[in-house]
Structure formats: structure tokens, C-alpha cells
Length: 70
Image 1 (spheres, rainbow, N blue to C red):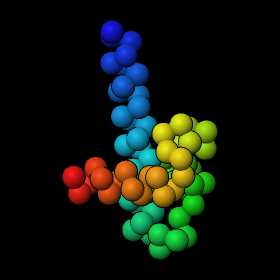
Image 2 (cartoon, rainbow, N blue to C red):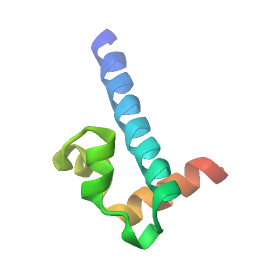
Image 3 (cartoon, helix red, strand yellow):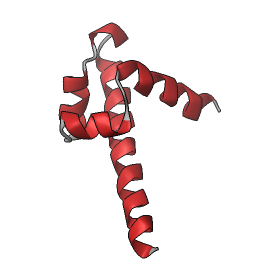
Image 4 (cartoon, rainbow, N blue to C red):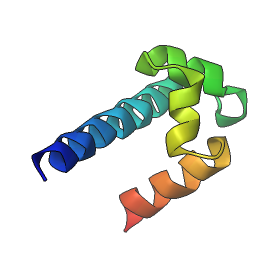
């Protein structure tokens, strides 16, 4: 059970890094110009990790909206 908690913490940290990178990029450029490559570089993860958590950028945006707006 302790292993699952650790895994959950890793997942939460990774998703937080992706969200923070996305927010920072939104402050720098238009939404249409934000790429998955830019997000992964800013979050310091690889593309495969991004795709483990989200299908694409639209999936990231919709989940971001759900979590932010409730």
C-alpha cells in the first residue's frame, strides 16, 4: 500500500509540473503557439511521460478547465 501512495505522489508531481509549465507558457505566448514539446521542455519531462497523462494538448486543456473551474 505504501508503494501505491508513492506512485500517486509521483503522478501528482508530474501533473503539477505539466500544469505549471502550461500556465507559464500561456503567460509567454498565445495558446495556439504552445506545443507539447515546449510544455515538456519547461516541465523537464519527456514526451512519453506527457502522453502517459494526457492524450494531447486538448485533453490537457479540458482537464485543466475541469480542475480549475470545478
